[in-house]
Length: 230
Image (cartoon, rainbow, N blue to C red; front, side):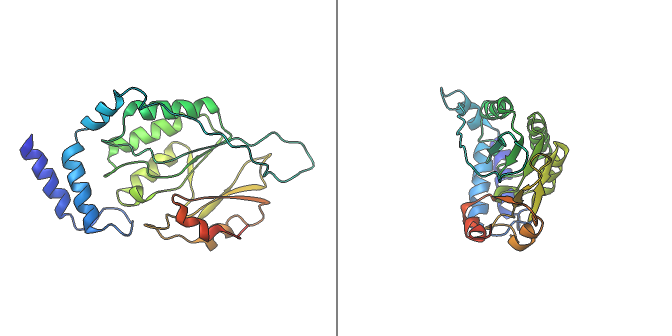
C-alpha cells in the first residue's frame, strides 16, 4: 500500500502539465495535488467527513428578484436553481452530494445552472458517470453549465461529454435563450477568467436581441467583464 502511494505521488509530481487546457497550473499546485492524491486518493477523508453529524446538511438560499421584463401576456415567475463546486472526488462525502442533488430535485426549477468545478484532481471515467447521473436526475426543463478551474486542469472533455449526456448545454463564451414563455431571456456564460480564455464579446453577441441577459461565470473575477454590459 505504501509503495503504491509513493509511486502515485511520484507519477503525479513528474507529469509536465495537466491534461486539460487550463492555464496557471503552477509547479506549486502540482506539488500540492500530488501530495493530496497520495494522502487522500483512497477516499478515506470523504468517508470520514460523511460520518460527522451535520456535515452533509445542505441548505437552500432563496432570492426573489424583479428582473423579468414586462410582456403583453402574464407569465409566472422564472425559477432558477444555481449550484456549483461539487468537487466529486476523494475529499467530498457522497452523502453531501446526495443531499445537494435531492434539494435541487425538490425545487423542480425551470432552469438549472451549474457553475463549474465538478471534480477535484483528475476527472476519471467513474467521476464523469457520477456527474452525468446526478445532473440527469434533476427535473429541470433547461440545464446550463459552465466550467471551472479544476475542470480545465483535467480531462475537461470527459466532463463536457457527461454534462451534455445529462441534458445540459455548455456555455463556453456562449449564450442560450430560454424556451417560451421566457424566450426573451438569455443566459450568458464565459470561460473561466483565471484558467480559461474568456471572450465576453463573443458571449454577448450570442445573446443579441435578449431583453434580459443573465451572466454566469465560475469566479467573481469575471464581474468586471460584465459590468455595464447590459
